[in-house]
Picture 1 (tube, rainbow, N blue to C red):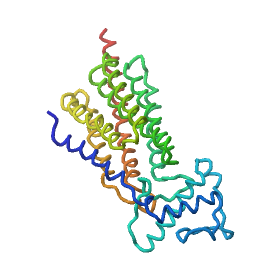
Picture 2 (picture 1 turned 90 degrees about the horizontal axis):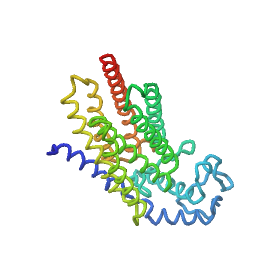
Picture 3 (picture 1 turned 120 degrees about the horizontal axis):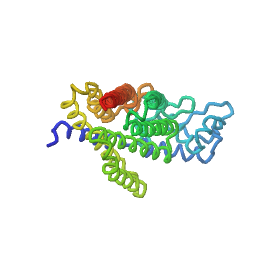
Picture 4 (picture 1 turned 135 degrees about the vertical axis):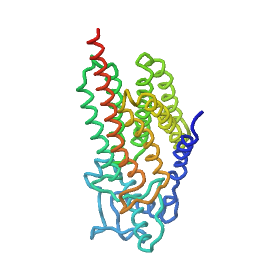
Length: 330
């Protein structure tokens, strides 16, 4: 029977969906009128035709997209939405009115062309941790450890996931969002898969991998072919392997903590990870227009990712020692 507290963690993660999907600012007449007027003069923003909601910087009332914004895929239409959003929000801040979301996102101040600079920074730091662990796994001898390649594949997928995260938070468009979600799901599922194989044995590679591969393909197909992107289902689907690893590694630690004392790191990781992810439930407007709950979640995964990486390295070293001991006996 599944412990009640594990079900509570799963429900807490799923509860994040309605909080993170709400949006109001893009539906207001002020915003729509501003964007409509702005888009009619795409690239150039004549001050005399601008609504009261917008403020224009250049003295001549014109401003074109900078080179870096064009490199990051900003168009005149998306620039209109960004400018109108901030003119409205700055006026509301002066009146001490509540900050609202636009298109399901809190308003962020761009920095060096980055749409969500805090999330980009923390994603990059996560990538650095993953690359460091990946390089150390490569140094292990595959002849002395049959699980080395399994973890290498896992960390290659982690690298892809964090690169996708950096790309998505740099420029939030449909394709970068889909790549971020699908890469993250694949990384999570493969970590769960590697955990099962690590516990049950390498002989179960195909038996466990086949249904998980089918489940992932069905998940992606559903999200890509549905009338709308089902954020709620995506959250629940990802929560299943995350929460399932809690009893998996907890039992491993309970029965093997003397033979494998380093397993506490895996146990601590899988227990703390859902609670770190649950910080998104308590969503809040960005502090200093920079740090929101999602960025905080990425910040928390940096030490957690390092902890998990140390477990993987310890596990590989332990298996390598056992291999050498068995070789001496033979």
